[in-house]
Length: 253
Image (tube, rainbow, N blue to C red; front, side, top):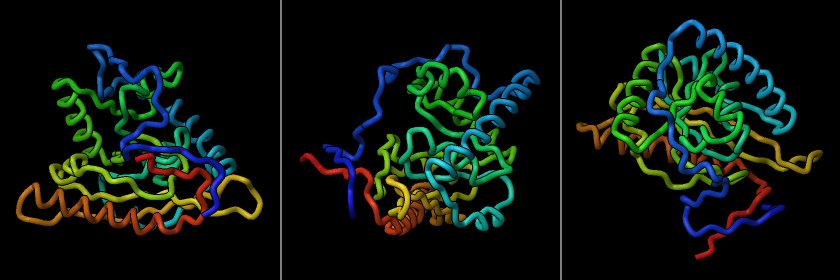
């Protein structure tokens, strides 16, 4: 694969997009779920504007093409989507556009809330922050349960950190796969791949939606491990569609 840039990593958990907001703390009265009318109205407006901006950005700048939307028709109600994390700005728009007309809710790091301007509008875009406090963990679980029962897709990036234009799938734990097992909900995976363009310097983006997947086994542990294997193996296989490394990642070990 041809490459334009090189980044060196020591671990697959390295964060190339780390900012000064890593230790940002949410307000103690932060609400993971809001159903009041003012919030619904403002959230609808902001989300709609974000979809318009995201459409222009993804289709014109990232040259996105989505395959596998037909798999969404196999699902009734809420579901989970596990995706590789390769675009600092575009990732959330990619998924939001792919599952229209449904509205996504995305599990995010609280560090994102410390970003000027963006942090203020995240709650209106369906962000569900992860915290280390017991209260935060409890509220996140309640919010996910609420949104799933309302029929919404929940987006999770199991690789955690963004590796821009990375063309493989990084190893990730099965901890986040426990959500669909607990709620008995279907899961899909979204794999972003990159192909050489004959016109543009940056690669073309081809996005695959696969699933639905269900965990099988006799225990929660077995079901979680089975679902993890299905999701990870499918994403690894799809990643082979990439034929262009705009940024090359090299182990520094």
